[in-house]
Structure formats: structure tokens, C-alpha cells
Image 1 (cartoon, rainbow, N blue to C red):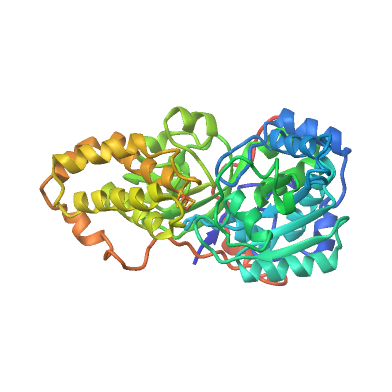
Image 2: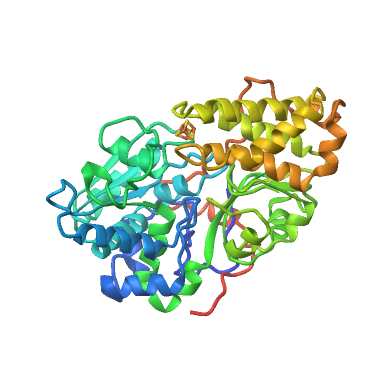
Length: 448
Ligand code: SF4
């Protein structure tokens, strides 16, 4: 079971909220300032710009830049004539990263916070219709109930899809809402230019929308809201954990809270941020510092390596998952992810020689950017980070079996161990659950 840990204080500007174990009603949301805006759409956009809020789906693109691009594309002369026209907004809660639970938890626990953010996004872009896109039936039921409880100011439809690694990629989102398969398309055009039904479309992660709603209600706390993030911790020797942290908390602090203080490293950003070694635990969890160290927070999913775990197995397992999830549309992805996976398994089983290592090194440099989505980049990036962070471990695997790999490496086609269960969210308050969530992490801090 996945636990939820609250920070030492639960300020009203936290996404986790005071009762993350219960679905929040419209009345409870209103009681904490929800569905009220202290500023108009133009001013809110300026606050988001000034706060530097970044998207929380994985790529970390500045939220205000994306909002403005959709608004401008909608207002562009001739847009309606070209079959595009009035913008569309989409709350993207399809969480394809196997180690992440925060988006499904958010839709189950705080659907009003997301729908409020979607309405603000519509106001800022000029959109007149919206969608909530998800793959979790339980989240879908809670969102539909929330829509009935507090009808939004624009028509909002819930669109469900199957859960895959690529279904949440923004062009796949557009394709699925338009009635096609949830598979990425070649870009350009990007959804902000031509999205759902040909209209300029904002596809925004649900945590990003939640932070937009919090900023609208409390613009004075914009920096604190923009510089905090939900994190899912798994792997290591503890129970999976969902929490919210201010940027800058060292990964080591989180690892200790998780029960793996002496982790041997971590797989960062879901399958997007690559591997870091034990020294990486001293990195502050903040986008700039992580980028400088060659890694990323991505969707906030971090898988810790337990003491004695082998990073080669971790990389092989991650790339094995990616190879199985390839949408098989781009030839280079089909052959590339399979080849990288094969090389990593050869390393793990002690059957790799210098040529395998040379191939892996070449692919890590040559494959990124060649697929229609980020899956191939994630596979190549994982291999590259393994080579950079653990060179001595790679050398010891050449032609020699690794004992840790022999124990840990799953069967080629066996079930993956990367999936994390979504924390339980009750329908109604229960006094039983709250006391089991001890505060263990620093309070959310920051200057407004
Ligand atoms: S890169 Fe891979 S997963 Fe992405 S669209 Fe191409 S084939 Fe599909």
C-alpha cells in the first residue's frame, strides 16, 4: 500500500491539502477559499509568469508560456477560417509513468481543485470547452461526481483511455479525444497550434492546474505554490510514499523519510531522469540543480536503489518496460529500445563484451530526439546515465555475471516491479486514517 505523508504544516496553499485520504467535497473546497479568484485572468497570467510555475507532467515547460501560446493562437487572424478557432483546454490526468501516483491521487482526492484550475485556464486562454482526460476509472467517477456537484462555467467532458506509457503524451491526448488511438503524432503542429478538433489546445497536467487554482486564490503566495511539488517515492527498502515538498529538499532527506537512508542511488523523474549514484542523494530536488547534474525531477516519481541493488538491473528493468510500451509507430523506436534493452540485459547477465558497451555508448548519444515522443529518449537517457554514473560497475559486468543481477533481474517477459499503488482515498472523512500520517518532512517554506 502507498502511504501519504504530510509536511509538518498543511497550509492552504498545499496541493496535498489537510486530508489527502478523503475525497474533498465542493463545500469543503469552498471553505478553504476554493472557487474564488482574487485576480482576473490577465492578472493571474502575470502572476504565473512571475512565479515561474512549470508544468508537472514531466517536461517542466513554463505554464504561463504555454497558456499564452494557446491564447494567441486562438486570437490569430484567420484561425477560425482554417477550421481551428476557439481554444480548448484539457486536464491531463493520464499517468503513464509506472512509478507515479500523484495525478490519479489528485483526481480521486481533490477533483474540485483540478476543475477550478481548468476553469482558470479556460478564462486565460479564451477556451469555451474543456476535457478531463484520464485512465483511472475511480478517478473518473470522482470527477464526474464533482462536475455534478459544482457545474463548471464551461462544458467539461470526461474522456477515458487505457493506461499506457505514451497515452498521456500531449499529441496522443489530442488524438484520443478526437476519437483516434491514444498514440503520439509527428510534430509540428503542436497541440497549441492545432489540437482537439483542429482548435488551439492547452493540454495541462492536473497538478499544474491545481497549482494554477491555488495561485488564483492566493496570488501573494505564488512563489511558494510554484516552488513546491508532489513526489512519489518507491523502490529501496520502504513503503511507497506520496508527499509534497518545497523545492530544495535534498533527496537524502526524502530517502530517510521513505526508510532507505543509505540508498545506493535512484532512478529519477519516472523513467525520464535517468540514474544517479549515491552522491546524487545530496542533490537538492529543484529543477535547475537537477538539470545541472544531468538529471530531472520529471513527473516527481523517484525509485530508490536499495543497498546492494545493482544499477544495471535497475536500468535493464526500466528500459524493458519502455521497450514493452513502445507504440511501435517509429521504426527507430522499435529497433532502438529493443537493442538498448538487449544490451542492458546482456550486461546484467554477464554476456556483454566490449562491443556491447561500444554499441550502448553510441546509442545513448545517437537515439535521443529521433522518435515522435519521448519514450526513445527515456530509453537512451537511462542507458547513458548508467554509463556516466556507474562506470566501475559497468566494467565489472563485462563478461562476468553479477550476483545482485542474478537475484534481482526479472524474467525477460515477467511482470514489471515498477508499478506503485495509488493511495487509498475514502469517499467520506474517517477519523481512523488521519493519525496514521505522521509529519516527517520540512514545512513548505518560501517567500511570497
Ligand atoms: S518514439 Fe516510440 S513510443 Fe513514441 S511514438 Fe514513436 S514508436 Fe511510439
